[in-house]
Image 1 (cartoon, rainbow, N blue to C red):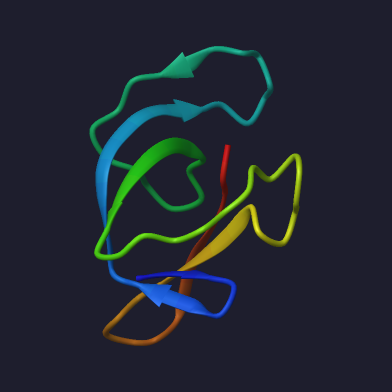
Image 2 (spheres, one colour):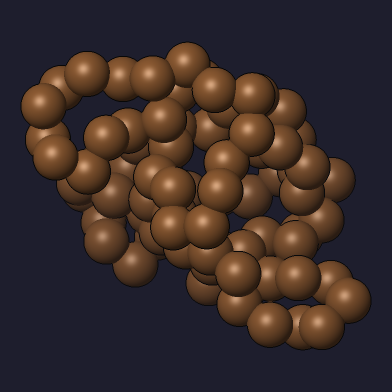
Length: 81
């Protein structure tokens, strides 16, 4: 589930585009899955539309958190490009 502001929508990862290396080398790695604390550019498929801004333009409306639907725990955070 993705929580964007007060909206909670069911989400599924549609694609993992690439993993971003934390050393800021600019080298992106192609991967099929992500591990703990990995940073990546991904696309989601949502069950309903959300209205958003790019993070660079509006920090609050350009960010979200990911919630595990079974435990209701926060499992990740993201920024909209």
